[in-house]
Amino acid sequence: MTNNGVKYAIIVTNQEKNYNLNLSDQVAEMTNRFDEPVILVGGFNITPWSYKSLPYFESSFKTNILDGNYPSHLINLLKKPMDYIYTHDGIDIINQEIGEDNGSRYLPVLSTISIRPI
Image (cartoon, rainbow, N blue to C red; front, side, top):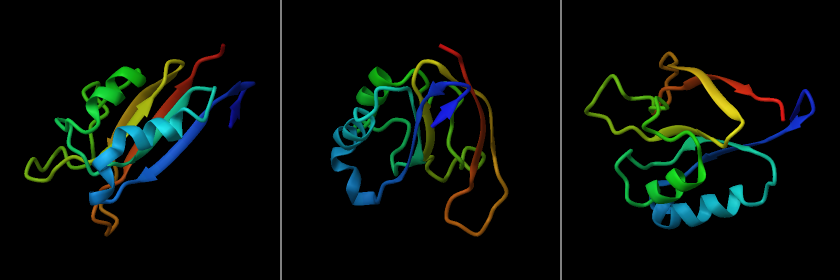
C-alpha cells in the first residue's frame, strides 16, 4: 500500500492453535517478502509470555506486545490474550481500544496508526 508516497505492507493473519509450532519461522517468511515497513495484525494463538514467538517479534518489530499493544481480553484476566498488532520502524500506533463484543470468540482490536514520511 502507499500513503503519501510512503510504501508499507499490511499482513493480517489468524493462526490456528496447532499451527504455531513454528510461528516465528512462518511470520519471518511472510514479513521478509517485503522491503517496505510492515504492519502485522492478527490472532496468533500465543500469550505474551510465549517462548514460541517472543524472540523473533522482539528482534524484528519496533512495537511489541508489552508496549501497550495488548490483546483483546485484557479486562478478563482469565482469558488468554492472543490478538496483537506489531509494526516496523516508521509506523506508530497512536491509540488502541477493544471493540464491542460482536459474537466472535475474540473481541476486535481497533487501532489508529501513523505512517511517518521518509
